[in-house]
Amino acid sequence: MPTDLRYLILADGAFGPQTSKTANACIRYTPERVVGVVDTTQAGRTAQAVLGFGGDIPVVGTLDEGLRLKPTAILIGIAPSGGQLPEPWIDLLARAIEHKLDVWSGLHQFVSDIPRLASLARQHGVTIHDLRRPPADLDVSRGRVRDISATVVLTVGTDCNIGKMTTQLQLLGALRNRGIRTRFAATGQTGILIEGSGIGVDAVIADFIGGAAERLVLESAEGADLVLVEGQGSIIHPSFSGVTYGLLHGSLPHAQVMCAQPSRTAIRNHDWVAIPALPEFIRMSEAAAAPLRPAPVIAVALNTFDLSEDDAQRAIERTQRETGLPTTDPVRYDPAPLVGAIASFHEARANR
Picture 1: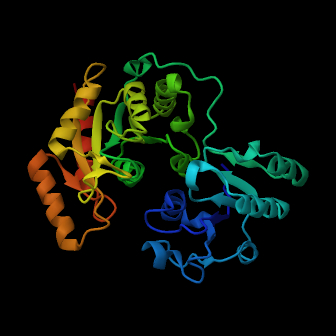
Picture 2: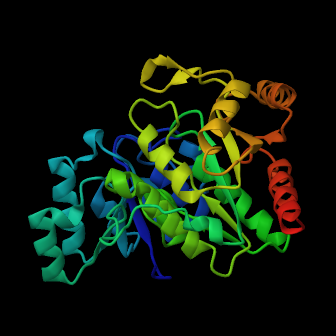
Picture 3: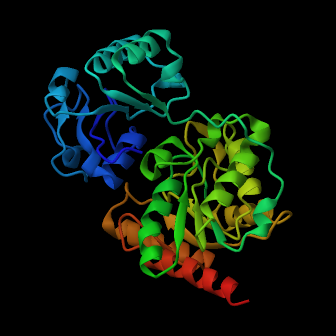
């Protein structure tokens, strides 16, 4: 990935804490690459005012205003309904390409497959990066992860968009600071954007999801003692459980970190699917992994962004009491309890 990237993020109409996952993660973890955000509904504010982090990164209302910030690329920071680009966005991207901005996109619809934009990109010497486009030579998973010595830890969750990627990124630096050679295996478009490599497993043909996870772990384990795999979906999600199981069985983790949101009692947008109590959900996740390789849940990462300080502390204490596991919100508080759990598990494995 180029080191001189200067993103103008397109998040029109949806820049916010829960509605612009890609934009938010880029601003949180690579703020030096972001010059501004385009959103007509939040124009005139800053990322800090909208998200609670991001400092004085400005929100502008038009592409022309954004171009004054001297970006080198435009990044699609949200997912439009259905994952398809609306016609006004195609017009905006066309203008951005004409101004020689590279395009970075994590949508299911590949921007480079849109004839008008592909033609303009060739004409202006611009590169379109479709982060979700998978490798063409994927194989099925074959259990080859069993042959590596590195410890593999997978984040799993009670639902989608609950903190699986963020948890791993919050742990990465702290584990490295302990002297553990740690790699992050990105499995979604936002993680790929931040890490600079990975495979968007939700765009992989179903038979090869496990193979994609296996390849990622094998590659990440080269020169590493610990591999943190970004989880996706949920084992009970009616739409996305296939990706979850593919990751679980392809990456063959030694341990899992459970991610949950205390205020969420049902799968988002599927109120008919109740989320079981956390101790039961942990048992279910461990049972799903066990036939291929036992993978105990060793810690719990809570997403308490929508709770008051007192309620967040009570939720952490209650979860730790009910599960018997180290628990914290690794964004809101020091991730040390989770870091310690992973480091201890890894060191115990290494000393067997």
